[in-house]
Length: 326
Image 1: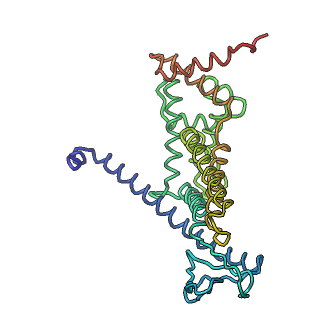
Image 2: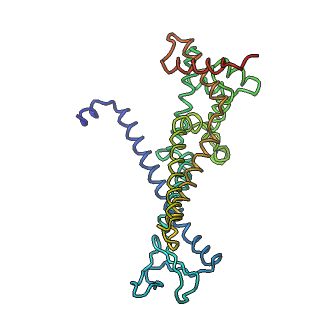
């Protein structure tokens, strides 16, 4: 049935699906490559920190053999990626040997950094590797489609793009009111259109935030902000549990990698959540946007969906709560 459905699909649809698959696979490979690069770059930094700051001996080569402080204990063999031994007492008798696992401790920050670098590259590069650029252009088309449907004058997206990109500061607010969108949204849309039309690579790089703001504001923060916040709470719960186990001495002091893992997990999630807050709408903007969407649905041939009615009632009740009027 799958093959029959493919054969029945138009050639344009097949090519479009293939392009999307290629773009997604390329983006995932970019994340993997950049994450591995960042991780391998962190390793000499940590070694320098242990050697220079802590004044410790670091054993992380597979040809080295490490003895522990316990009698009759087996000899240990380090591994550069996963098993380091840190000797802060320089081989003295009964010295404490700390075990550090880079793969567990710094893999999450490396992945977050790899995703950020892949996003920047896929935003700037053309062709099939331009994963984020295609997402930004999609959001621009969606917003243009909403505005053109509201105006209902039969203009093309190209005409609307040219009109929005030529708006000055004075006409920006008038256009936003007449199109049923907020001033902030139409300003971001205008900057994103200019960014997408820019052919100079360096100018597009300098104004990269104009393009990313379009995707982050209209899609990512709108769809995933609650999910990111939920993961932040999960990371905090993991951190509390691991720190509690360490306090109860279930985790030895000589094995700090699990503590570092929980700290890096919460750090990575907090950075992600901070980015969603930076690009998200403020509460007043959300209320104005919700009111505009309900107004759009009421001015059409249909009042709108049940969700529109619910949003309209929420705004009405909130604006008419007791105590708002004297």
